[in-house]
Amino acid sequence: MPSRTANLAGFSTSLYSTSTFASPSVGIATASDDTTIQTIGKGPGGVATNTVFGYQALNSNTTGAGNVAIGYQVGRSNTFGGCNNFIGLCAGYSNTFGCFNTAIGFAAGFGNTTGTDNIFIGRNTGYANTFGGNNNFFGQSAGQSNTTGNNNNFIGNIAGCTNTYGAYNNFIGYRAGQANTFGCFNNFFGSNAGYNNTTGGNNNFIGQCAGYSNTFGANNNFFGCLAGGCNTTGNNNNFIGSQAGFCNTFGCANNFFGNRAGYCNTTGCDRSEEHTSELQSRQYLVCRL
Image 1 (tube, one colour):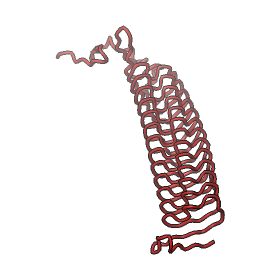
Image 2 (cartoon, helix red, strand yellow; image 1 turned 135 degrees about the vertical axis):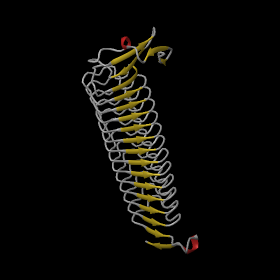
Image 3 (cartoon, one colour; image 1 turned 30 degrees about the vertical axis):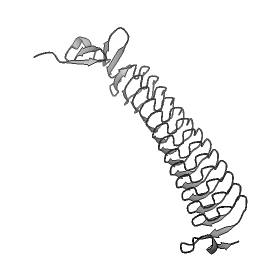
Protein backbone atom coordinates (compact mmCIF):
# COMPACT_ATOMS: atom_id res chain seq x y z
CA MET A 1 0.00 0.00 0.00
CA PRO A 2 1.57 3.34 -1.04
CA SER A 3 2.45 5.84 1.69
CA ARG A 4 -0.02 8.71 2.10
CA THR A 5 1.48 12.12 2.87
CA ALA A 6 0.10 15.40 4.27
CA ASN A 7 1.96 18.52 3.11
CA LEU A 8 2.22 21.30 5.71
CA ALA A 9 3.73 24.66 4.66
CA GLY A 10 6.46 23.19 2.51
CA PHE A 11 7.24 20.16 4.63
CA SER A 12 5.61 16.74 4.70
CA THR A 13 4.63 14.23 7.34
CA SER A 14 3.76 10.63 6.68
CA LEU A 15 0.39 9.87 8.17
CA TYR A 16 1.49 6.31 8.88
CA SER A 17 5.03 6.97 10.11
CA THR A 18 5.34 6.22 13.83
CA SER A 19 8.73 7.95 13.93
CA THR A 20 7.05 11.26 13.15
CA PHE A 21 4.94 11.30 16.28
CA ALA A 22 5.92 11.77 19.89
CA SER A 23 5.26 9.06 22.43
CA PRO A 24 1.64 8.40 23.36
CA SER A 25 2.20 9.89 26.83
CA VAL A 26 3.01 13.28 25.28
CA GLY A 27 0.79 13.06 22.26
CA ILE A 28 2.47 15.71 20.08
CA ALA A 29 3.11 15.44 16.37
CA THR A 30 5.54 17.88 14.79
CA ALA A 31 6.58 18.56 11.25
CA SER A 32 9.39 20.99 10.65
CA ASP A 33 11.65 22.74 8.19
CA ASP A 34 14.42 25.19 9.10
CA THR A 35 12.07 27.87 10.49
CA THR A 36 8.81 26.40 11.75
CA ILE A 37 7.40 23.70 13.96
CA GLN A 38 3.88 22.59 13.29
CA THR A 39 2.13 21.05 16.29
CA ILE A 40 -0.53 18.43 15.73
CA GLY A 41 -2.29 16.51 18.46
CA LYS A 42 -2.52 17.26 22.18
CA GLY A 43 -0.02 20.11 22.15
CA PRO A 44 2.39 21.18 24.92
CA GLY A 45 1.60 19.67 28.29
CA GLY A 46 0.32 16.52 26.64
CA VAL A 47 -3.20 16.99 28.00
CA ALA A 48 -5.30 14.27 26.43
CA THR A 49 -8.41 16.41 25.96
CA ASN A 50 -6.74 19.21 23.96
CA THR A 51 -6.82 19.39 20.18
CA VAL A 52 -4.02 21.48 18.69
CA PHE A 53 -2.99 22.29 15.13
CA GLY A 54 -0.72 25.18 14.20
CA TYR A 55 2.62 26.83 14.76
CA GLN A 56 3.10 27.60 18.50
CA ALA A 57 -0.58 26.91 19.11
CA LEU A 58 -1.22 26.48 22.84
CA ASN A 59 2.54 26.86 23.18
CA SER A 60 2.69 27.55 26.95
CA ASN A 61 0.01 25.16 28.05
CA THR A 62 0.72 23.16 31.19
CA THR A 63 -2.53 21.80 32.63
CA GLY A 64 -5.27 23.53 30.63
CA ALA A 65 -7.69 20.91 29.35
CA GLY A 66 -10.53 20.64 26.88
CA ASN A 67 -9.10 23.29 24.52
CA VAL A 68 -9.29 23.44 20.75
CA ALA A 69 -6.54 25.59 19.22
CA ILE A 70 -6.29 25.81 15.44
CA GLY A 71 -4.08 28.32 13.68
CA TYR A 72 -0.84 30.26 13.94
CA GLN A 73 0.01 31.10 17.59
CA VAL A 74 -3.57 30.65 18.77
CA GLY A 75 -3.82 30.44 22.54
CA ARG A 76 -0.04 30.78 22.65
CA SER A 77 0.14 32.00 26.26
CA ASN A 78 -2.48 29.64 27.67
CA THR A 79 -1.27 27.81 30.77
CA PHE A 80 -4.22 26.67 32.91
CA GLY A 81 -7.22 27.89 30.91
CA GLY A 82 -9.60 25.18 29.85
CA CYS A 83 -12.54 24.46 27.56
CA ASN A 84 -11.60 27.25 25.12
CA ASN A 85 -11.99 27.27 21.35
CA PHE A 86 -9.44 29.44 19.52
CA ILE A 87 -9.50 29.41 15.74
CA GLY A 88 -7.66 31.88 13.51
CA LEU A 89 -4.28 33.60 13.43
CA CYS A 90 -3.35 34.73 16.98
CA ALA A 91 -6.87 34.16 18.30
CA GLY A 92 -6.84 34.00 22.10
CA TYR A 93 -3.09 34.66 22.00
CA SER A 94 -2.73 36.07 25.55
CA ASN A 95 -5.17 33.78 27.32
CA THR A 96 -3.71 32.30 30.49
CA PHE A 97 -6.43 31.25 32.95
CA GLY A 98 -9.56 32.19 30.97
CA CYS A 99 -12.04 29.36 30.47
CA PHE A 100 -15.06 28.61 28.30
CA ASN A 101 -14.13 31.22 25.67
CA THR A 102 -14.68 30.98 21.94
CA ALA A 103 -12.54 33.23 19.74
CA ILE A 104 -12.80 32.79 15.99
CA GLY A 105 -11.09 35.13 13.56
CA PHE A 106 -7.85 37.03 13.09
CA ALA A 107 -6.65 38.23 16.53
CA ALA A 108 -10.08 37.61 18.05
CA GLY A 109 -9.80 37.81 21.84
CA PHE A 110 -6.09 38.48 21.42
CA GLY A 111 -5.55 40.19 24.80
CA ASN A 112 -7.88 38.05 26.87
CA THR A 113 -6.08 36.70 29.92
CA THR A 114 -8.55 35.55 32.57
CA GLY A 115 -11.92 36.54 31.10
CA THR A 116 -14.39 33.68 30.95
CA ASP A 117 -17.52 32.69 29.04
CA ASN A 118 -16.87 35.07 26.13
CA ILE A 119 -17.68 34.61 22.47
CA PHE A 120 -15.57 36.66 20.03
CA ILE A 121 -16.29 36.08 16.36
CA GLY A 122 -14.72 38.26 13.67
CA ARG A 123 -11.45 40.06 13.01
CA ASN A 124 -10.16 41.90 16.10
CA THR A 125 -13.33 41.23 18.08
CA GLY A 126 -12.68 41.56 21.80
CA TYR A 127 -9.05 42.26 20.95
CA ALA A 128 -8.15 44.04 24.22
CA ASN A 129 -10.45 42.09 26.51
CA THR A 130 -8.54 41.03 29.59
CA PHE A 131 -10.87 40.24 32.52
CA GLY A 132 -14.28 40.88 30.97
CA GLY A 133 -16.64 37.94 31.05
CA ASN A 134 -19.95 36.81 29.61
CA ASN A 135 -19.56 39.00 26.52
CA ASN A 136 -20.73 38.21 23.00
CA PHE A 137 -19.00 40.20 20.24
CA PHE A 138 -19.84 39.46 16.59
CA GLY A 139 -18.43 41.46 13.68
CA GLN A 140 -15.19 43.11 12.68
CA SER A 141 -13.68 45.03 15.62
CA ALA A 142 -16.81 44.62 17.71
CA GLY A 143 -15.90 45.28 21.35
CA GLN A 144 -12.30 45.69 20.26
CA SER A 145 -11.21 47.86 23.22
CA ASN A 146 -13.27 46.14 25.88
CA THR A 147 -11.10 45.30 28.86
CA THR A 148 -13.19 44.53 31.94
CA GLY A 149 -16.75 45.17 30.74
CA ASN A 150 -19.09 42.28 31.46
CA ASN A 151 -22.33 40.91 30.07
CA ASN A 152 -22.25 42.91 26.84
CA ASN A 153 -23.68 41.93 23.47
CA PHE A 154 -22.13 43.80 20.52
CA ILE A 155 -23.28 42.64 17.11
CA GLY A 156 -22.16 44.41 13.94
CA ASN A 157 -18.97 45.81 12.49
CA ILE A 158 -17.29 48.19 14.99
CA ALA A 159 -20.23 47.90 17.40
CA GLY A 160 -19.10 48.93 20.90
CA CYS A 161 -15.59 49.24 19.52
CA THR A 162 -14.20 51.53 22.25
CA ASN A 163 -16.12 50.10 25.18
CA THR A 164 -13.76 49.49 28.09
CA TYR A 165 -15.62 49.11 31.41
CA GLY A 166 -19.24 49.47 30.31
CA ALA A 167 -21.41 46.52 31.27
CA TYR A 168 -24.81 45.05 30.50
CA ASN A 169 -25.06 46.80 27.13
CA ASN A 170 -26.68 45.56 23.93
CA PHE A 171 -25.40 47.25 20.77
CA ILE A 172 -26.70 45.82 17.52
CA GLY A 173 -25.91 47.39 14.16
CA TYR A 174 -23.03 48.94 12.27
CA ARG A 175 -21.10 51.26 14.65
CA ALA A 176 -23.86 51.05 17.24
CA GLY A 177 -22.51 52.41 20.55
CA GLN A 178 -19.08 52.72 19.00
CA ALA A 179 -17.75 55.38 21.42
CA ASN A 180 -19.21 53.89 24.59
CA THR A 181 -16.64 53.57 27.37
CA PHE A 182 -18.25 53.37 30.83
CA GLY A 183 -21.95 53.53 29.95
CA CYS A 184 -24.00 50.64 31.32
CA PHE A 185 -27.44 49.14 30.80
CA ASN A 186 -27.88 50.66 27.33
CA ASN A 187 -29.72 49.18 24.35
CA PHE A 188 -28.75 50.63 20.96
CA PHE A 189 -30.32 48.96 17.92
CA GLY A 190 -29.64 50.28 14.42
CA SER A 191 -26.81 51.62 12.32
CA ASN A 192 -24.95 54.33 14.29
CA ALA A 193 -27.48 54.23 17.12
CA GLY A 194 -25.94 55.77 20.25
CA TYR A 195 -22.74 56.24 18.29
CA ASN A 196 -21.17 58.90 20.56
CA ASN A 197 -22.46 57.64 23.88
CA THR A 198 -19.59 57.45 26.35
CA THR A 199 -20.86 57.20 29.93
CA GLY A 200 -24.61 57.62 29.54
CA GLY A 201 -26.59 54.78 31.07
CA ASN A 202 -30.04 53.22 30.97
CA ASN A 203 -30.75 54.48 27.45
CA ASN A 204 -32.78 52.81 24.73
CA PHE A 205 -32.02 54.07 21.21
CA ILE A 206 -33.73 52.20 18.39
CA GLY A 207 -33.40 53.27 14.78
CA GLN A 208 -30.73 54.53 12.43
CA CYS A 209 -28.68 57.24 14.17
CA ALA A 210 -31.11 57.37 17.09
CA GLY A 211 -29.37 59.15 19.99
CA TYR A 212 -26.35 59.60 17.74
CA SER A 213 -24.77 62.51 19.67
CA ASN A 214 -25.67 61.38 23.17
CA THR A 215 -22.68 61.39 25.49
CA PHE A 216 -23.71 61.59 29.16
CA GLY A 217 -27.50 61.64 28.81
CA ALA A 218 -29.25 58.92 30.78
CA ASN A 219 -32.66 57.29 31.10
CA ASN A 220 -33.70 58.27 27.57
CA ASN A 221 -35.89 56.40 25.11
CA PHE A 222 -35.43 57.42 21.47
CA PHE A 223 -37.31 55.33 18.90
CA GLY A 224 -37.09 56.19 15.21
CA CYS A 225 -34.58 57.29 12.61
CA LEU A 226 -32.58 60.24 14.02
CA ALA A 227 -34.83 60.45 17.08
CA GLY A 228 -32.93 62.51 19.66
CA GLY A 229 -30.13 62.72 17.13
CA CYS A 230 -28.49 65.80 18.70
CA ASN A 231 -29.13 64.99 22.34
CA THR A 232 -25.93 65.14 24.36
CA THR A 233 -26.65 65.32 28.09
CA GLY A 234 -30.45 65.51 28.26
CA ASN A 235 -32.03 63.02 30.65
CA ASN A 236 -35.35 61.26 31.10
CA ASN A 237 -36.66 62.03 27.61
CA ASN A 238 -39.04 59.99 25.48
CA PHE A 239 -38.82 60.72 21.74
CA ILE A 240 -40.82 58.41 19.50
CA GLY A 241 -40.97 58.99 15.76
CA SER A 242 -38.64 59.83 12.92
CA GLN A 243 -36.52 62.86 13.93
CA ALA A 244 -38.57 63.37 17.10
CA GLY A 245 -36.69 65.67 19.47
CA PHE A 246 -33.91 65.86 16.92
CA CYS A 247 -32.40 69.19 18.08
CA ASN A 248 -32.72 68.51 21.79
CA THR A 249 -29.37 68.85 23.51
CA PHE A 250 -29.82 69.49 27.27
CA GLY A 251 -33.59 69.35 27.57
CA CYS A 252 -34.92 66.93 30.16
CA ALA A 253 -38.12 65.10 30.97
CA ASN A 254 -39.72 65.75 27.56
CA ASN A 255 -42.20 63.56 25.73
CA PHE A 256 -42.36 63.96 21.96
CA PHE A 257 -44.48 61.55 19.94
CA GLY A 258 -44.76 61.48 16.17
CA ASN A 259 -42.80 62.40 13.06
CA ARG A 260 -40.53 65.40 13.85
CA ALA A 261 -42.38 66.05 17.13
CA GLY A 262 -40.38 68.49 19.26
CA TYR A 263 -37.89 68.80 16.45
CA CYS A 264 -36.67 72.29 17.38
CA ASN A 265 -36.58 71.88 21.14
CA THR A 266 -33.04 72.32 22.45
CA THR A 267 -32.99 72.95 26.21
CA GLY A 268 -36.68 73.01 27.12
CA CYS A 269 -37.79 70.67 29.87
CA ASP A 270 -41.03 69.02 30.93
CA ARG A 271 -42.65 69.53 27.54
CA SER A 272 -45.12 67.25 25.83
CA GLU A 273 -45.82 67.33 22.11
CA GLU A 274 -47.69 64.94 19.87
CA HIS A 275 -48.10 64.68 16.13
CA THR A 276 -51.05 62.38 15.46
CA SER A 277 -51.04 60.07 12.48
CA GLU A 278 -53.85 62.10 10.88
CA LEU A 279 -52.37 65.54 11.52
CA GLN A 280 -48.76 65.41 10.41
CA SER A 281 -48.44 68.90 8.92
CA ARG A 282 -47.03 71.72 11.04
CA GLN A 283 -50.27 73.81 11.07
CA TYR A 284 -52.18 70.93 12.67
CA LEU A 285 -49.66 70.39 15.43
CA VAL A 286 -51.22 69.42 18.73
CA CYS A 287 -49.23 70.66 21.71
CA ARG A 288 -49.74 70.02 25.39
CA LEU A 289 -47.51 72.28 27.48
